[in-house]
Amino acid sequence: MPPARLPAAPIHRVLLRLRDAEDLTWDELAYRAGLTTRHLFRLLAARTVSELVADRISCRIGLHPALLWPREWFPEDRTCGRGSNAREAV
Image 1 (spheres, rainbow, N blue to C red):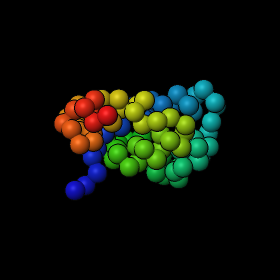
Image 2: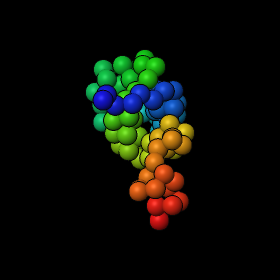
Image 3: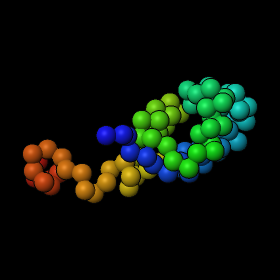
Image 4: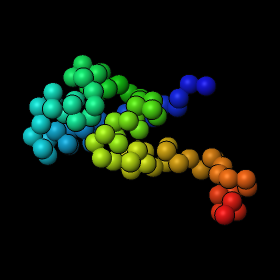
């Protein structure tokens, strides 16, 4: 099963704010995100991003992906533990 896709807009906003706040060049921003400059521009042009890429880049810039994608990262229909309700699994 392929990794889930997330909307790319949250990571776009964070990366562009980071660039402005710290006055980074595109190359410096790409390095901070763990990307090449070419991949940074491809990411900024994308509409969606895989969970794997979202996790890697958000952690690289010091954020948990759940801060950027709270509803998508912890969807309500996921079950945890042995019970069908996460609270019952304690």
